[in-house]
Image (cartoon, rainbow, N blue to C red; front, side, top):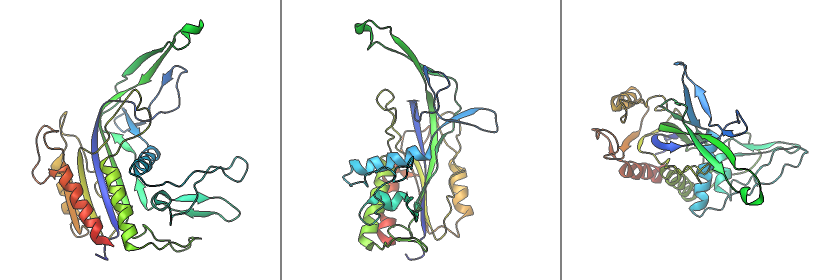
Length: 291
């Protein structure tokens, strides 16, 4: 399967009661969530690509992979970086790095991540809380509020399969991993995506971010074809025809594709969509044949 250059995975998940990703505070006692205003004039919450990348890294650590330890920048006020060792650390390979020394050494991430953007607008819901920790010492209760949201979120991850475990032209380091190690790393990333769980704000707002619907394809070109093709249909369903039409439109560039859904989760089960576990099994089979 030498023609394969990329694997694109678009997922749809649901957060019933969530505060996924914090933003700048609008007031001292209000914790805001990140939002984007769309053309309809409404605000839609999102979980940033940085947060998704961090969630994937943390899941890889949970799965037993040793991550590249962060270290302080050498320059005053310099940004922290990792050990910058993609040969020995899966996260430096998959998510890239930059070491700003006299000669900057960097690796562009072969794993491209979009924010997980809500498909339902923010309606102004707030969670009210009171911190009583200082009362026993004579202090006053501290009242605070947190913005919360309920709805569907959609995100996309594109993996440049030809760049995993390999240095690119002009890189100031050497990297050429074995096919077995490349396969191991991409399979692990696939497991992390299937078990996506953000680590921020989970103490009080535990959320299951794992995909409830997924559409994926392996391609000889690099294009996140399903990124803008997931739309809601009613209160608890998605437009399956739009996804199928997208696959038809790109049929000449798609080597294989799969659609999966959590059966019984949406208003109806869709023709052409297998159980989501089977979809990820098929994705793993593709990965095993790539290298």
